[in-house]
Amino acid sequence: MKKGNKNPKTMACSYVEYDRLSNLSDDLIYCILSFLSTKESYRTCVLSTRWRSIYTKIPDLHFEFPEESDLVSSKEIKYVYAALLRRTENLRKLSLYSRDHDIDSWQPQDIHMWVSKALDLKVKELDLGLELHEKTLLPCRLFTYESLVVLKLRGRIQPKLDSSFDVYLPSLKILHLQSTMFNCIFDDHIEYSLTNFLSGCPNLEELFLEESFTQLINVSLNSLKRLYICLFMPISHPDLSIYPLQINAPSLEVLTIMDFSLSPRKYEFTNLSNLDRAALCICKHSDFNSSYTILKEFSNVKSLTLGHKTFHFLSMEDKLDNTHLLTFHNLLFLSIEISKNCNWNMLVSFLHNAPKLKDLSIKKNIKKKSQRKEVGNMGWVGPSVIPTCLSTGLITFEFKGIQNIQTELDFARYIIDHSSKLKKVKIFTPNSTKIVESLLKGSRKSSILVWDIKSI
Image 1 (cartoon, rainbow, N blue to C red):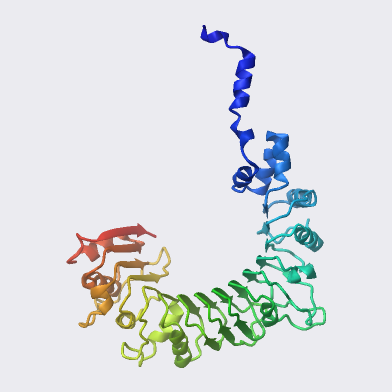
Image 2 (spheres, rainbow, N blue to C red):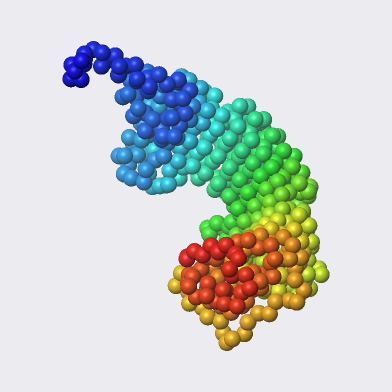
């Protein structure tokens, strides 16, 4: 039989038989479409009439509004309406995101209607990151919706409630609030209360706050496992009072605090014995005792990160040496951000009081064009008593931002030469050639370590 005499009908049947796309299950198609944007998923409707119906059943809808003209944004808004209002199947997640607050084509009522429709479709996760001209008020029933698991709000998006309204979100596990609460006033002109809101979330496990508060900040949740707080003072209200931050979370495992307020704040921590990882970056400290109290609450963590202003403040305290510093018996990872005039002896004190330390990371922010040089030839001489962690446990040492400055080179060489278990050194520097030459020169371990050198 000649190859050129194949029956066209037989070939057509062969194509149908191997049309694997049509043979895919609905669940597998949902999985494939989940890797596409909602708009791209919609375009797959042209593949077949079956895919057209499947599109209306995609569990997650994500809409990102471009930084373009109002005409383009208007089309996107119509597209969101079409995708939501035609839908009859339940929705797992609705995500709306924009970067441009100068878009005039949408109105607060659009957001209100989309959220209402999502609630009708029994949405589990709601993520709204919208920069709008006008304050957007969300429907009241959102805050008593018992099936909501994830709620993320960013921008001028606020609840339309009065102060007597009882929030009840028993299924909520994750709550993110970014720049939503400042100047959030109820209908009866009483200021929004974070404490009252959180009291209606009894099973919350993750809380992310990036806000300006004009009242007491009290986070008391037995179920909370992860807490990220970023506090700042708005430029338009520099004279606001600084209110205390209170945290009572016996199940808390991860805590990050970044406080950029212009005045010192009082911190009150209780029941943090379960804390595993902590990060602290505070711009204004009130006194040594308050800072010491904070560190005491972190003494059992396995991972600790300190911002440069926090470390600098501790370094200025004369009485804080290795005999007074708290012992971090469980600490395995230490990351410290330093300033240009670092107290290296203070840093060694930390090492003396972290006997199980495995990973040490030093970070210094430098300008790319910075050419700061050491004044004179004064170096740094490391202490004769070697920290226990260097001789028994340290495996990885990282120095990000190291320059050709004598004290920095001396400290790095001290760590490398006295760490008997050290396996890897990571160096991030603007001048890799000079730094490497300086560190390798005279080093007893230069040939047995794994070096990761990167320019910045």
